[in-house]
Amino acid sequence: MDFFDCNAAYGVPSVPPFKPATAVEDLLEEMAWCGIARALVRHAALDNESPQTGNRVVVEETAPHASLHPTWAILPTQTGELGALEEFLAAMREAGVRALWAFPSKHRYTLDAVTCGDVLSALSERRIPLFIQRGETSRGLTGWELAGALLKEFPSLVLVVTGHGSWGEDRYFRPLVEAYEGLHVDTSRYELDGGIVDFCRKYGPGRLLFGSAFPNTSPGGAMLTLAHADISDEDRLLIAAGNLDRLLAEAQP
Amino acid sequence: MTNDSPLVAEFFATGKAADCPVIDCHAHYGPFQAIYFPKVTPEAMIDSRDRAGVRCVICSGHAALVDPARGNAEMADVVRRFPERFRAYMALNPNYPDNLREELARFDELGGFVGLKFLSDYHRYPITGEAYTPAYEFAQERELPILMHTWGGSAYDSPQQVAEVASRYPTIPILMGHSGHGDWEGAMRTALDHPRVYLELCAAYAVHGVVETFCQRVGSERVLFGTDLPWFDPHYGIGCVLQSRITDQDRHNILHRNAEGLFAGKLP
Ligand SMILES: [Zn+2]
Image (cartoon, rainbow over all chains, first blue to last red; front, side):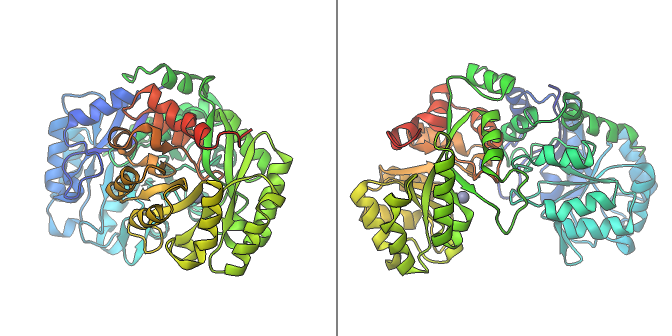
């Protein structure tokens, strides 16, 4: 089965996970061990040091590996650190980057229309997926409430919320899935017994993306759960890789 | 996959393994305030387990964790209806000391119970507290396992508090539910110092590297498998154990052999 991991990282975070993956080889070794063919990757420097560093290093280090697809972080354009918006998008095209992250709490900005309107409008128009971790906070909102506020302002944004808590969160995210067609959820911690099946019956497989949350989380759990979820093989392949392939193909930086 | 274990290959190919009949030592039953469960009936739980080759679960009812008087009877009824597939822990709430004694008094009469379950973090009452004494004496007399919810840094059920209990009652098998989640060093220390303390993996399995570290430092003979079903898909926890850097021997110990030994004669 072709697994395309939407949520993998490596590098040296200031507080290491239990078993760190500091080098790109550590990530590749784990992917080989588990049988994950491809991964959308961010470098720990992206949120721990600076986007300037993380954006640069991940492209350099993943370049030799066709199985690894680099991701970057956005910043507000007003301070100009990542260049003007057009320059940033051009650099994305150049580097083959097709998905972005927002870390509003770690990078200390407000993720809303006033601060990020130009960036978020461009991402919406160009169908560039924006990833955000469930634990990020902005404008006093966290997780699904932040995702809901963002999608209310940018209803056509392709937003992927990763690593939702193992405490079930369906009561939070299902209403947003119904309201906004761009909302996607990664399966790294969608451990709920029967969750994937139940979700697919109601919403189809299109909004779920296989993710590992490696190196914080052991990839084997999300893999075996998806491999044997009681859904059609067609739906399984979409969640494992097809949905992410489609999102990246639609992205036009 | 460079993980070349035959057991792993069989689980990934078929969802289960013929010679690895999993025993889930930490499960629940019934709806719960904080979470939507798609598969909450005993029949639905059995379906999930059949898909993952889980032979038996040992459950505490969610209702029993709040109101033992009602919930333990409900749980015992499930075991009566499905004797080949369910066993139970009697849940005790130390905030109601009279009820705690009453529940212990009907342990045999209700039937189906193979241990006790403490949820001290939720009850906000420490496992070292006086109200638990009748339960510890009961467990000690019968060498009855106690599954404790444990969490790193908790004021109620930290690994250090488990060590204190284990020193006082060295013959009681204590299952550290969630392995003192987050305080992995503390949990391993407690297990190493107290031979009857077990590391139970529910939720802990998801933390990359924890399973293999437990096996290296404490030994797979002291690690037990649990899922919090109907919370977590059994395949999730099993997948984490399978993809850990451990031997198939370790995987068998964790997924069923240790539980077979610990609950010998009490499981279907
Ligand atoms: Zn539990």
